[in-house]
Length: 274
Image (cartoon, rainbow, N blue to C red):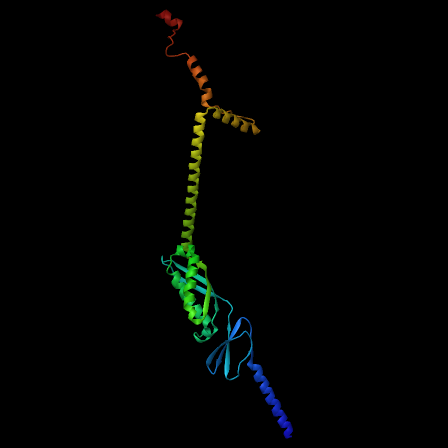
């Protein structure tokens, strides 16, 4: 009977030792690190791979070292030119020092989120709306630099900050639409004016050439007739330059009698009465 009890105790002890050994074996993947505390004292980060953690005496905290993508919630901001807008952003960061991420901040993800929100409101509130819309890249770089400086003591590296959406009020959207339409009309008028200027210069050059060489006008006239003849028209109008028909007009004008110089003719009855 005592032998059976001893055997049971040995088996129980072996089971306990086995469970302790199994709990002491830790496997950390490549993208994680295990921060070890021995009796409350920081011993450093271990991993990746297989290692032992002494039960009761040591405690391990897992830290993910991969890049974390976090959406910054929509923030209502008043820009430098007193326009109320709603803006949100996306943040990319990762833990580069697991020891600091555990010992220097309680929750590094939540802390990074809060810093991102306050920095987004502060930076956007210091620029005008046009600058926010036109110089998005410079504002992203400024946000990244400020947030990274504030999270560096926690062992956090902020790699990218991007402003995603900028929501404008309805009245501001209508005003910007009118402004864009006016700008397009301005560009259209300028392009049309530039075209007219270039065309007038070319026409002036062509007029100078025609004035120096009158034969070019006859060639242009013949070319016009050729272009008209290509179309199947029932009626063809021949344009004649005024220089061509001017001699005929002058000849006809010289051949007409002058009505003012002609003698007055009387009727026979009038002559007899006189």
